[in-house]
Length: 265
Image 1 (cartoon, one colour):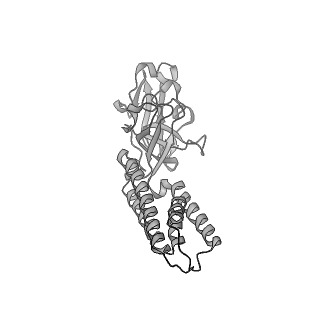
Image 2: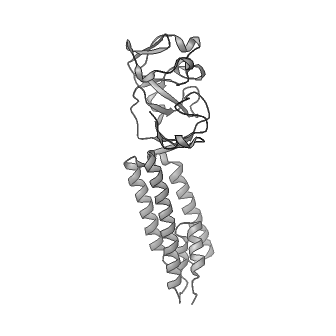
Image 3: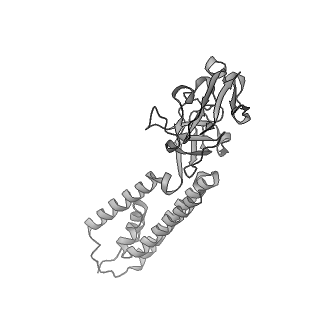
């Protein structure tokens, strides 16, 4: 008989979800807790909860609760096994296998969070969207968003850098005709108020005037809010709808504490 150590069970669960229960002889219980955790994440992803301010808090709370429940449960199971006969999975190589499988599985789960959980997160490295977004801001992006609308701030892969991720504001969509006149953006012959920026953000000639352009179907035209310092559709053309990553929803971390939790409009 081999008595299980409750401390080892707890530490094992802290390192790898489910490993403590495996050590204590109840791998099924650990698997059930992990399955409940993943199911709650998938449910939140379906409803797009994690791309919102409260959703990010909820995600952290779920992860914390999951960790606490898993560790406490493993410790309890470890204490119960006063007389425990080793089973086939109580071998070091099965522990290593469980460590690799669970670690890689959870990593893949969050690497592909855009398609699984419905959200992505990015950090701003350029000034093209000042004052809406500042350098250093971390943003939440709703990846379920698939229909660009004028005025929305989005993340996308530009045609000049398919592997890169840019953030700009949608200025026109497929079928629209767009122009810049006296610094104002005109879409289909109408001044678009959603694209207004202060005069000190559009002093250069290419920010004050742009000849009328037709946006092809299945694509969109983007502009930065800081027009004088933005590499956007004025220079490399429209973006295919297929290159859309998602809509920016919230600033979830910033060097300016007052900006945290700000909804991006």
